[in-house]
View 1 (tube, helix red, strand yellow):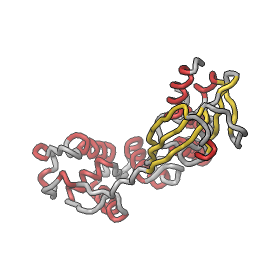
View 2 (cartoon, rainbow, N blue to C red; view 1 turned 90 degrees about the vertical axis):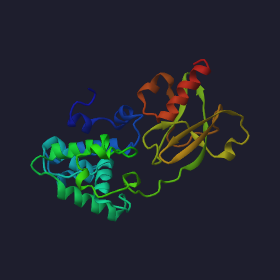
View 3 (cartoon, helix red, strand yellow; view 1 turned 180 degrees about the vertical axis):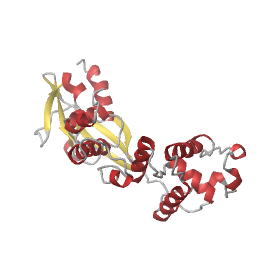
View 4 (cartoon, rainbow, N blue to C red; view 1 turned 135 degrees about the vertical axis):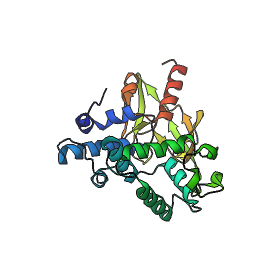
Length: 273
């Protein structure tokens, strides 16, 4: 409703897009969405391309998204590989190597291309995804009723697909000021990869906060990081670049990372604001 077409996304202020996307994570996606919308307007007269190779040239669109848009929206003969399809194909092939490696991706994508019904790509890709969602599931594959069991090569479906080990979480401690005066709260605009474009509480080094009494601690997880945020009810001795005061009544309109918004919603009533 707020962004009904490509043009609305292309011309929207970034803060407005980020606020609408807030809570979904992977915030570079919404930035790339806007860049893609702008490219479609500038280079394709506002008409979305249907060819998968052309789609891959748009910002933020990789092989999977290009294939999904091309086959589902336009019924073009384009293969797709998502987690469900990778699982199905690894079991059909009895493929005992990591499907998310360079070699594994090549094998799985080549197979998806070879078996694609080019006359009914939309239906075929949808069916293959649904097969992985419902029958060839990750934990309890229903092999006895599987429509492709007669040519499935694996005898150990539960061990497939093989994947690279997950990244370990990185522990982070952050120290932030929580300061309100004249119905305004001090905020800082993020520039790091995790919070670019989002307003947050102003951070300082542990040394700068060592003499302060902690107001509270908050823990949250964000993109392979486990964060402990130490909060101090104190006014910084000086403001850094991109730190400024905002009326508390404005917070609903600002893009603020979900963990920080939850803290603000919790702390402001506690302080009688």
